Image 1 (cartoon, rainbow, N blue to C red):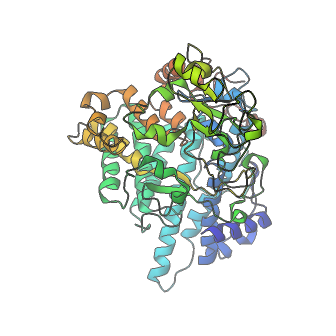
Image 2 (image 1 turned 45 degrees about the vertical axis):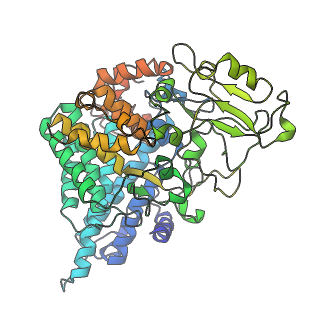
Image 3 (image 1 turned 180 degrees about the horizontal axis):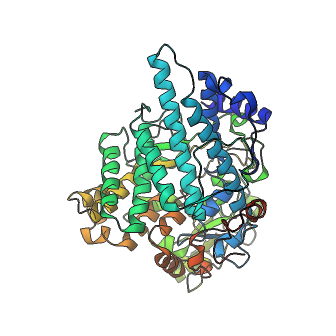
Length: 566
């Protein structure tokens, strides 16, 4: 699929389909008209491939991580953050925000490709009722429906009630009709139900394509969201059933070694047994370029390795290397996130963070004249006097009081425990900003978390077993029993959010996770855990509509700016 996507990207550019706004859509002429190119098997395959390409705008991209992880309880701004308005909920967060505008415009354009694919999957002629062709058409339509759901969910959770259409648009939409989030979720569930009953692949992964497991897992995620928002026991039960189905019947396994999930040897989602669905990044960077190479997407590739990398390369004894990464230091963990881990029992601490940098620039040791190996060492707790005395002329030692203030707000935004899950030491050079790491969108661990949380709410007898299976698998050897929890814990919102943070930090889910428990809990949790985002209030539960959109449409009374934003 890698080559097909690249070829179709070129086709899209030729046709002028790299839309900057869903309001600025292209008349596809005879290419999309009945009997045109899209009404052939090759044409349909091409347009479905185009539906996948925009996922590379999302997976591992700076603005996407800013939207989905920062300003939450677990991720704060590093000194290199370029959108502190988002991370700290400043008064300047408004309709001119570039990240909001980019994803609003691009995902509407992407949804239009999905609508186009779904339409033509039903119009490709099959006069001889060829079974293979019929299966292909059914599968391609199912893929497009799931992809439409994935993008629609991000839009409606980000902006609230939005414009929804399931028809391909061939002209500028000047009077978009607002659709409620409730109705949009029903449309998404209908799409996923259609896909689950289709002839999608049952393989572990299908080269990055949507599979039956993708559809089921995504529906479980969406059901959990709605169940949480509505406290709906029936929806909790459905989420539990689907998650359990994927766990029990799917070809996925929890990794015994958490760190191995993120090893570049296992970065190909097609062979990583934890991965249910992923965004494909090729080892050939030529295939990773997206549409028109806007600066925000940094020439293609997965950029997550840049964003959490702390500033080490200007420190004594250190210089930049491919091993330690290119330090954009956009985002850093909150003290709350760091404190969630019991490093003596839970392997996810060592598997998630880097705390040690070995000297690689002996001539640049500065005052650390006794430096021989360690250059920077960061500890989670408080350093003792003995530790500081030992480190005095040997290496830089940072503890929690060097990184965070007494209230938990950030003090040192350059040196901190680095979320290293997305590091890529295999890049071609120390300055290479593109990683070939696939973007893991859904992992089997999330299904265990859903089965436990939703099962507890739906009074399923084995709900606790799923949480304990996950936690015991993540235990450091010998501490399996110590990682077990009780039923009362998985019935507690705070424990559930804590456990999801330990497992899924940085994986572009957190902001949506906090939202699903309602505005009051959303604000309370962020204020408690992330003092740098203390400006948050209930109107931040959704993001601001792009001002360019509000200025362009004619029915301005239908769409007004979300409450609280300028």
